Length: 129
Image (cartoon, rainbow, N blue to C red; front, side, top):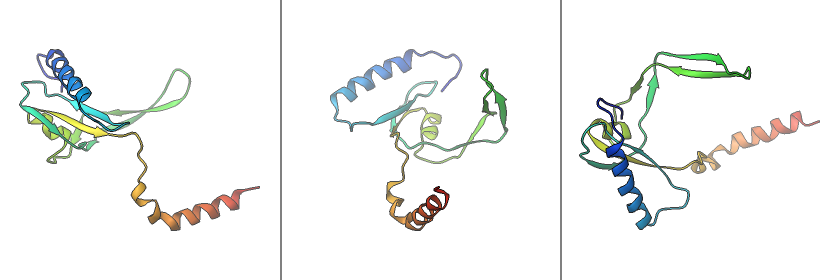
């Protein structure tokens, strides 16, 4: 969290202690931690889930130096107020630690989509030469 006055000193001290703690712990392979610190005094640490934010202003289409389109989300995010999120923890003066992983596959739903799988298989065979 950026505030005035802003310094990375407290964040650096916390990061060092966090890394030391993690090195002494057994953490799952592939685990990523999203860590956010409040701008002011740290009241403690919370294990959190990701909060949801919506950009209400606009999405601006631009062209990069290579001539490719890209989209810039403009404006200030509006956070959904929900207990247990990273945003709620930081807003209350706590460090938030959110466990993440890169695989976004919804494995629990794979079998629920049997009808979709069949439709996709039919689609693939209808476009094959």
